[in-house]
Length: 447
Image (tube, rainbow, N blue to C red; front, top):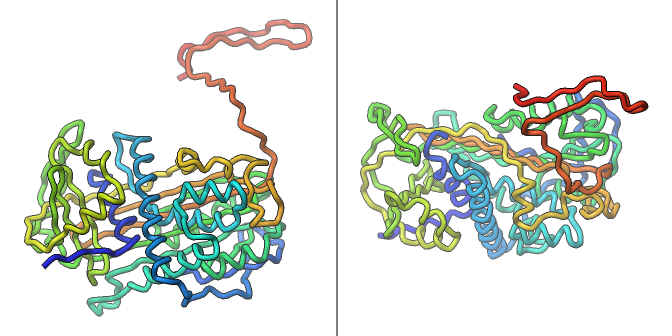
């Protein structure tokens, strides 16, 4: 009997991301927002709540959820190919869902050409009035699957998705924008002094991130991310932990080798014979390892020997849908490596720029007037992402964080001229009034 898994964005965006990192590599924050300003210290962020409560039963059509999942999947493959092209010889692990969701909160304030570019780059085909309720409904649905299947007091399947906004204490954002974040994303605005207390502000944000990801991800922002024009940071955090539906026996884990493009490396290989959803093609094999509850699984795509580059280049959302369609329940002997990928900081600005989203990062060109009502003032200062995964005999633990920060002006266009002193040079120390050369030297090796 053929079993077709169509479990939406979770499998596509979380599990698929995990499979490409095979070698070495808390509860929802139902906070709400307001436009009111309160002067506080960054050491003690004040959470300001809105009269708008998060809509925990959004009236969203099923076809809108399906459209959002399809759009996020298209974004996933655009993002994947850009990231692997950027570092073709390294592991990559990321959460496209986290990036898309955090970007949607920013998108809620975008207008005119900035809005159009974000819409195209992120594959948002739903309009603003429909998109945000759809994200809300999808997140609520995904997080509803938490359960303690063994009745031992510990959840065997956890998926927590939480959002927050960190805003400059003395800046007024539009009430309708803050209500959009509160009603659809449960994102409260925590008032901090980003401009004058960057050290304690970044510490507060990082502490929140660490708490939401069970300590797996730390340090998403640094004090130098902020300056006298900083106004906000929007953050999404995801924590996932699930046990295999059929766990591997630790006694079956043996020392083995993994064949990288550069040669053999030693690994711990898990072994098990059991039933999985399986399919294969001319240049690949596919197997889906279910987690307890069978609402999610890790889909592993294994290109045939010598076919990795060819298969990877051909991988699209349509190709994935075909592979999933062909999965059938089958008994297999499975050997799978234990691995974990430490969090890697991904700068999303060049990634978004390659996708055509350029205006958002340029002062006096970006239009986020939907946030504060001021045209051509706010632009994005940074966009970052980190993700972690650990796979062992019991299951999978993963976390991801996306942070996008912005503010007002003070920076013009980036100069075209570059002066990069990365080779031998000659220098002088001179008196500029008389022209007297006081010192002269050359540096062939500054180390």
